[in-house]
Length: 269
Image (cartoon, rainbow, N blue to C red; front, side, top):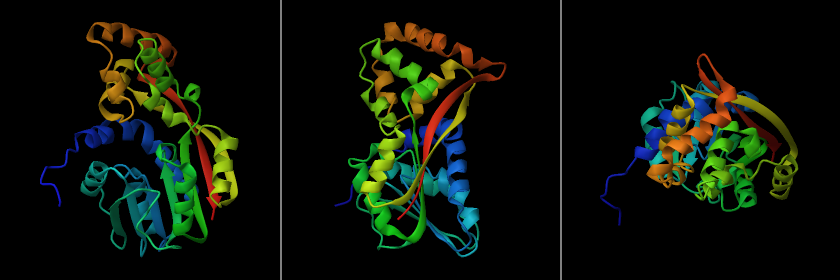
């Protein structure tokens, strides 16, 4: 029986407002450029979130192409559906489902992309094997994951400030659990992918201030908001001061530009 309770999209909307522009948009542009979707192709976006990859890729598969966005979070799918309008000649479909059990026939997609999703799957190998199953022979997979926590300066400062206050930062650290090139290459090979290429890359996330960075993660990062909320009120000012001190070197006249390291995996089924 379906619930009559309205879907709460508050967290997904905050993610779209605060995290997507600063972190995900430049990565999504990189992923789409590397995948090079062509007119008429069928593209799959795994762990699509609020649809930033779909927004960028849709004009590339026009005319005659189609894109499926899949995410396990119904709120993310609801926000994506409300935001994304495909160009004429492109069909968009949204699916709320697990990446380890996708509702697609085998050999359906020419291109698959996964932006910062593999590290959150219960089994990365199972998820990659399922992506491989739904890809056509000769298709292209482009997947991006964060590299080490130390390469993502803002998140590193945030996690360390939490740990100093005995707040569990495990949910934040999980985002960096696939940051080893050899490790993710081995997982892809185990899932059956071939011609696996791993590239290290960097970008920057810009915020108006360090305080704005912390507020953005407190509101929009699903992995950070619960941890930040556990910092006692009387420790909040010291918590912010610790992070500000760690990130002061990245401040400029326009705010703060925080380096972000990530790995790009390009592979074929």
